[in-house]
Length: 337
Image (cartoon, rainbow, N blue to C red; front, side, top):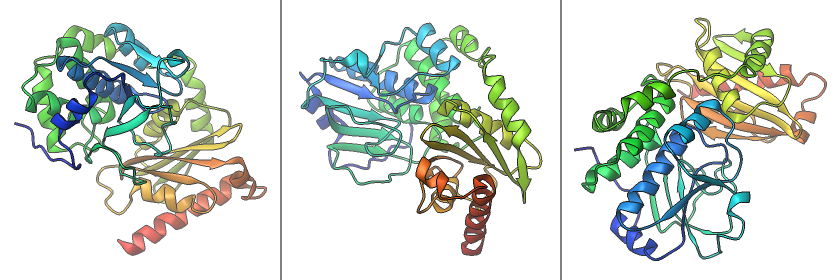
């Protein structure tokens, strides 16, 4: 049996009672990755077992090959904000999955966010009816808990979506893994469709992705085991994160910072090796961008944004100033460790 903890004042049964007979929506973060889609789809199917129909939705863009393949192979129906036009009212309940309202990576829809199930640190207090936030490797693992504790066996495609999301968000069980994630893997493994899972794991990169990799390689700088790479053109959030994982794979790098130029500023991704205990990526980004931008996330992976006015404040050589800010932020963390 998986280890169950709750971080809310109402039970899951009370949430189910609240949702009955309502027009329910399950919302992922803006640029849903396999974990967000797997967890969201899984929770949608769990609600269906209780006779509750819910629409899976997002406010942004599905921008990666692996997420598009996942949706196609597993017959997942997911709606963009534009596709929801006219179907959601102000009182319709929304469950935030793999995200939290006001968290920086999820934009408001007009419905009422009554619940959230997430594995990211809470950055702003929101008065949810039901809240379950736990620091585990994958949000899909938490949804597996719900199936097991309620005695509901997920269908093969549901189990496959959860297992694939779990594998992707933990980078093949090498990042942020907890005992709960391992237990979830054991629970889902025999239930998943292995043929579909194998197809999902093949051909995860598109030709256009190579441009970002090439730019990162051309611009990489390494100081004291910290690797910095600037991509001088707009990149999707997921591609910046994947490029950051690539930089982290270098022997000379323990902490990777990759940032991409956008029309309205710079988008950041940070990664660090699990064994680096004196660096918290979320804190590192928050400290480095303090006063000019925003950042946060897990201890081993995080994201941030520096608006155009923040970039302008860095002067004629923003890259040099940014590297200095990150080095100073890391030094302050070393002193406090």
